[in-house]
Length: 249
Image (cartoon, rainbow, N blue to C red; front, top):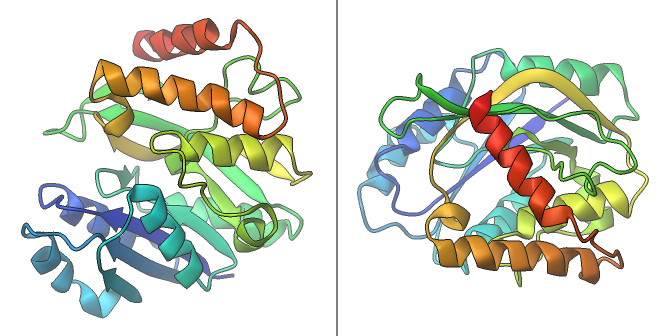
């Protein structure tokens, strides 16, 4: 079974090499690697060009933001399973995709798989700063402040056809809205594996400034409403507590 891995990037010359190398070092053989570059003006295109022989599809053009770029990659993907690795991140080890695909290959009915991730230092990806362990999906998963770590999420490509792509009207929380949609509105079969999938560097647009944190939380509440759900009044306090617990771990 083929898996498509998508990396979207814009002016990220410092870490794009690590992301590419972590994909190319995977020991699973049937990987389609797609890179969507937002027309970078730094050294990112030159770094990517060194690996073109091992990249199946490379597009460099202006886009309307990270989620628009992800949608472009999804529409280019030909694999039965799709995963997204951001240009700041890297897979935990070379066996990640093999371990993920064992489950998809053994269970034809499996639609969604996700695991755990660790946040690491920007300069030292071996320095763990925060650990995000998820749990098995259940009826009140989102209500209790849980959310799958999006970089650890792998889905069958047909899900994007049935449930839709990322909603680009969400500038910061389109990944949250997408996961809320595919888990709560559709009867897709999911599996949580207790395994470290991704090393994620600290940062990200949502957490860069207090203003973005507030806007991201507002988008999360709007995602519930847009999908026909009522967010519990204690959702945000519970989410804050869960985030603090990640630092304690």
